[in-house]
Image (tube, rainbow, N blue to C red; front, side, top):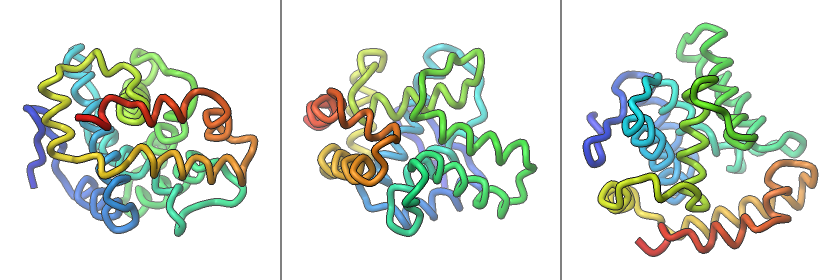
Length: 201
């Protein structure tokens, strides 16, 4: 099924269909819509800069990147992004992806919670970082055409995402005090997330 928002298309194929199906099965509506918006933000950022990227790899990573925040995949010891990386390895092994490509999906998910990666170094990781940052806290939103942002939120509404996502991170921080989510919760991230202009689009 062709998925398009304001001229930005999602890729086609079995891996895309199955990743989207798994995301809709395990994530609630707010988290699923966040995953979709994260892909489209990243893809739009790439198109505006003329960057070539592996759309299948980015889409699959975007669909899986937060599933370790859900009870079936939550780890009581690993930060959620690391648990999500392991989930991606298992999922993509089932698709028959070679080990190097499985590792790429896992790495993209882990890196979305780390320091920024330059697109010249790893374009798909950078695109997921851009997409999730814009969608969660509004960082970098001024880089996007307001008409695109409006169309994206209309296609995938917020559904109270900011409040629910802060709650998920608070739970991670309480149980895993050394994780990246805990560091964000200790700073201004919760306020930035709740004040994201997208919540008012």
